[in-house]
Amino acid sequence: MPILERIRRIAQANITQWLNQAEAPEAEVQAKIRELEEGAVEAKNALANFAVTYKRLEKNITDLQTASAEHQLRAEKALAADDESTARRSLSEKMKANERISQLTPVLESRRETYNELKDSLVEIHDQLNQARAKLMDLRARKRAADAEQVLGHSLDDARGPDGEGFERLEDAVLESESRVEVDREIRGELNPEPLERSMRERQVDDELAALKLKLSKNSD
Image (cartoon, rainbow, N blue to C red):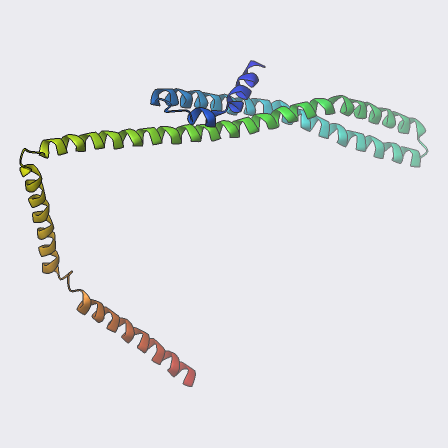
């Protein structure tokens, strides 16, 4: 089946080695992701369709096994009632069922192998898809970092002056911002949090002490 061969080819591809090659372009990774997504859909559909015939055959064999056991029981009851003719017919039906089971069992085993292979291929394709998506995210993150570094480089170039005045203005602006933050903290009392911490601790001690008194009073009762 061509679709099974395609699924096998996708699942067996060494994507890890491909992704680890020197600087795989983002466009190629995106194309690989699309291929894997299509392969995952095909594998899932093939697995669902194949499961119908596989499960039907499995049920057919189970029904034949049940019928064989029933024919055996019917033959035993017929012999117990001295009805040899009925017993012979029952045993003949049992043999037909067993012959059919023998014919279908190798087919079932072959389909079970294919069914399990499709399941394993689907899992492998999903694993490869996750690797490819992670690689794409890494490439994009690296591109954003490179773009940001380039922008920063341009900003630093613009800040450089013949006498270093650009850096001095930048430093003054940073110092002013830090000073404003420090003043805001002083106003909010964030530079002196100890009285507030002691107050909270004292309240916690009061709560613990009250709980302990209540526990002791209950024990004394």
